[in-house]
Length: 195
Image (tube, rainbow, N blue to C red; front, side, top):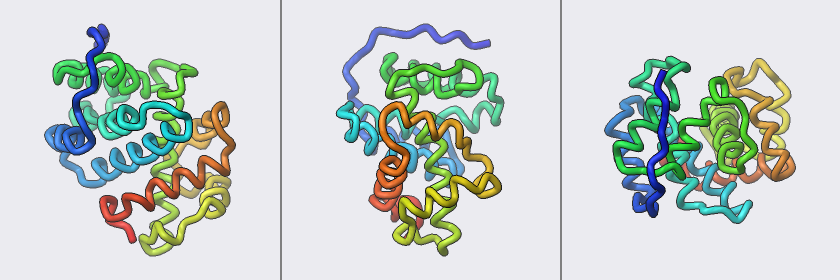
C-alpha cells in the first residue's frame, strides 16, 4: 500500500492549461479527459460560490483522476498513485491531499469543503453529461429541473453515487448546486464536445 507523505506546501504555479497538458501526459482516453475537465469546471464554480480559491480547486478537479489509467481502475491504489505522481511533479498537499482523499472508499469522509466538493463534482459531472446525452448532446437544453428529475431515477447514470452528491447539502441547497453544475458545464460545452 502506498503511504503518502505530504511535502511542504508551495505556491500553486500551475494554471488550468498547464494542468490539462500534465493530465494529457498520463491519460489517453478522451472520455476521461472530458470527465476531468467537467469535474474541474464544477469545482471552479463551487469554489466561487463558497468564496474559496477557484484557480486551485479547478486544478485539483483537472488532476483528480491523473492516475486512473495507470492503476487500471484498482481502487486500492487510486488516489495514492495520483498523489505520488503530483508530488513528484512538485505539488504540495493543497493539491495532492484532495486528490488522494477523493478515494472515499479507502479514506472515508472528511468535512473539508475541498474534499466534499471534489467527491460531489466527480459524481454530478457524469449525471449532468448523461442528461445532455439524452437530449442529443445538448447541454444547452439541460436545466436544474432536468437534473432534479434524473437524480431520482437510480437506473439513469447508475455509476453516479447519489449519496455522494447529497454531501454538498452541508454547503448549499441541492437545487442551487444542480443549477451551478449545469451552468459550469454549459460554460465549457465545446471542450466537452456538447452543444
